[in-house]
Length: 478
Image 1 (cartoon, rainbow, N blue to C red):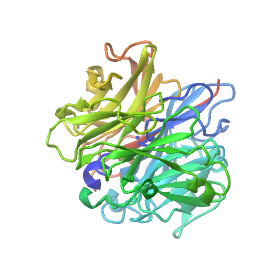
Image 2 (image 1 turned 120 degrees about the horizontal axis):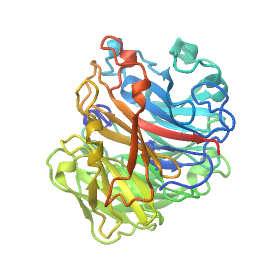
Image 3 (image 1 turned 180 degrees about the horizontal axis):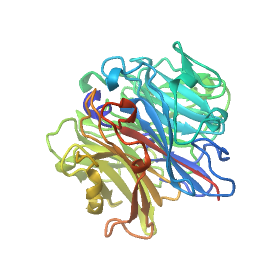
Image 4 (image 1 turned 90 degrees about the vertical axis):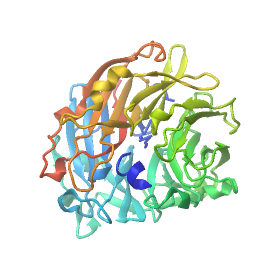
């Protein structure tokens, strides 16, 4: 259910959800290399980068606390850069139970500004997208919080900020198409209900962030084995013509051709989406996260829906949804699997897989053999899975830079309370891409980006960090 899997702790995810493309400016969210966003850095505001400099920024959805945060990871302006208050349905003293939760989630940065998916606004079962133009953000002071009242009053957004009501249930994952249009994954089931009820096919929306027009494509078009409960989205190729979608409701993934999404109306663009289903044959499992394999196919993780500590599986599928050999093993003590990113190195491909909810929580390396197998745990990161207040942190959200040499990690408590503070963290890891991570750690340094942010204060919910659920990496400059 949602409380144990997405809200109480959940990488546009993402994907923030995401293998890395190479060259040029780019961004990545929930593990997906997404180099199609805006290329010119704003001169001021939380997304700014000084002219002539290279900057790496990390944008974070604090989904449980209805807030967006900005950090500098590289460049002359590192550390905390500010935040946006997105508590549209106010949480009394941080209590986000019932209808209070808005849940900002998927992120995208394009030429026009920052787009944020809000999973439960205007209502718990109806999501929307909020667009913050660059000129609006550039006018805001850095290191401060952009107050809700500067763009939202009496239940409506005020220009130039605006919302696009998507009219669907759980639109939470997003990628930027090279055309500038946005691809939005819709779960289309009630995540607060039992997983056995997640039978509706998911959808892919094609959204024009300028006109606000929305085209819709049901994944039921893939047949009776369609993609029920569409989850994370990842790019499968550097040209950004194909995407992979996790299908949690029916244990598999959809591999989709989105090469024509930039053509015609948004309705025509949505109708052009087609693909196939990669089916993991074990029923009643949790299948949410996948990553590209660099050859047009995917690595797909499957594990139990509850903490039985039974082994899960690592499946590989080719570009035509055919299984590649037999499955590898996800050891039972690694339940549950969270974000996965493809990690290229000089000798081939590896993947980094986040797991949480057990004592074995952490980042684990997966080999590209047949079958794929967990080959190493990054034990050098173990000290970072304890919060400054002594509480346990469980990694979830992962996003690589476009060279595969930097990684943002969101980590938070295993079960944050509806109305109590937690001290989740956002880390930046520098990686050595010449090292085979199966044989040695690729991590050369770790920076706690949240160390420079306002400290968590027990009686001030605007400082709480109960779930940095999506991390999005944006790069500017040479």
